[in-house]
Length: 145
Image 1 (tube, rainbow, N blue to C red):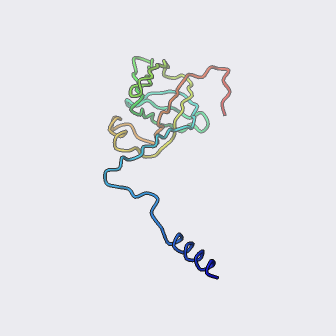
Image 2 (image 1 turned 90 degrees about the vertical axis):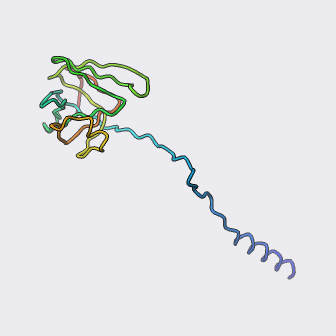
Image 3 (image 1 turned 120 degrees about the vertical axis):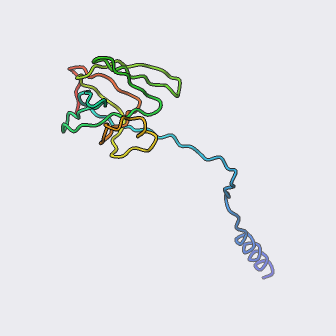
């Protein structure tokens, strides 16, 4: 009986010892999670009102292209030079032409955050396509959905 009481007291004491797993402190460094837009759009690359856009080949909807900080585009005549790796340092360029059918990774959004909104001329309205890590011309033999 004495043994049962001792075991009961030990188990009860152990069960009552509750300590938090972790307690954030004001000096804690925030943990940053990198996200990426991973959808794909197929369409025709166009320019209107100083905005690069893509006309979706599925439903003819028009998306204004938005370039995140790691990507930029320069238009000279009908040539569009897209440069990747501005922030990451893994530079590569893709040369496209206005009127060309393209495949663009990224994702759709109706609204932009303040940082991205300031990167566009006021005349560039949504819906927007945030350019991901790839953009390339489509060959006539490429099959798309």
